[in-house]
Image (cartoon, rainbow, N blue to C red; front, side, top):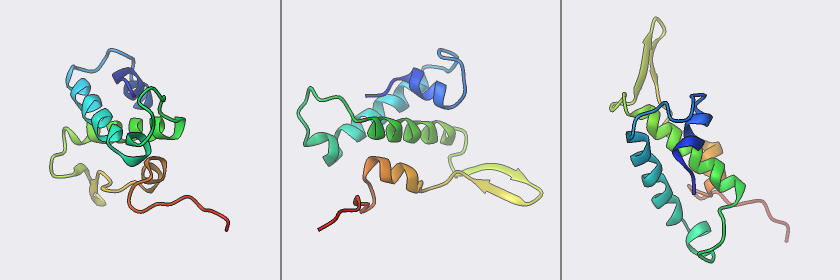
Length: 106
């Protein structure tokens, strides 16, 4: 499972510098990832693999960035609106989402 400190470090912030709402985000992501087949089908005492932990941290960071952009707009520049990405293929690969399957031989 991930912690709020994991996410703050990923975001480049000092641990403990973010309000308690990050705990809600982390709890939500931990519950979601725990229900994914890659984790749900593993023995309960098994630690999350590093790739799943990184994917969960990335997901929590994206949710945290969305807190101030409910419509998905992150910034408005002279080039137009910049949006928080809806899909992240790297995170999908790490968490084995969206039909991603690892390459296999045979």
